[in-house]
Length: 308
Ligand code: NDP
Image 1 (cartoon, rainbow, N blue to C red):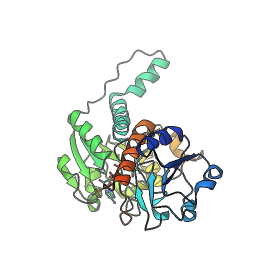
Image 2: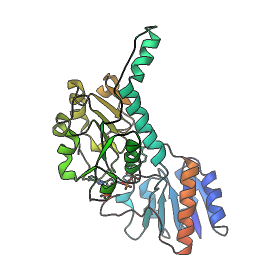
Image 3: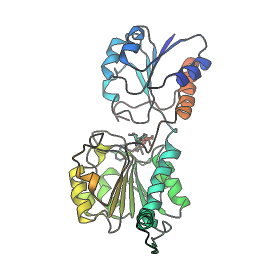
Image 4: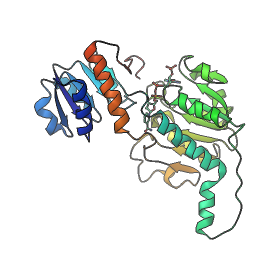
């Protein structure tokens, strides 16, 4: 059996996979040129950032393990007879910590304190506690459910929204996508952890934003497609939501001319809330390979129809 790992850093993957499949031929490639000689005979592809058109040139390909959680770049390009899996679980802790790092910093006034320090100003900054506030988590999957769990640990009331009623049991109140407006209007912090699909396109638009509470915070760590950015720019200028933390954008890198860069109530991170933790992703990939080799059900199989 031949396996190809296509990623920026391949050595740790190749080593972890070779342990599980000692007899397999495993090649690493960081560029298309390096991958080229291996395309024809590869049965299993572990990939991040591979040009999707390459799949059509892999006649023996049976399975693609995407080395990330969101498969929007690859799902529509993978032939139907090829199993596509994504990474589950490797990003939940670090992404929910990112969300709460910002929620705490914004609520407790940490950025303001830092600015006062720069100006040598001794002034008390006293922000509200998260305890008792209402957290809304849109997307209650592997990552969103951890955000919800941490919200509870901070004493927040947790509302959740998902496509089906899955995840409803971890929330105080559950909403469906058709109820997005009421959901968003009822929470103090709205956190989006949604996959990019045609259904999540622009799920947060001018109407949803206009209904958000005074003082509310919007966080997006899912995908940029979920928010209509021009509507958000107008909404942030009006101060509702009061603040936004955006890790993902309609276009990435965020274009230099985007007004979001300079809005004082917009806090930008460069799609790094869920850095690939190679160690965790490797462990996940190796376990899925073990399952594949032993004919056991793999974890993270992508449902083509849903798109995630
Ligand atoms: P999961 O597939 O585990 O969960 C997806 C959740 O979204 C489910 O609760 C699902 O509902 C819900 N959902 C899907 N479509 C809709 C919709 N139209 N309306 C409402 N809810 C919907 O995904 P993960 O939690 O593992 O990851 C979520 C996303 O986070 C990824 O798709 C990826 O895009 C993004 N991500 C971002 C990273 C970053 O660095 N910023 C890093 C890693 C991931 P249901 O279960 O009912 O179908």
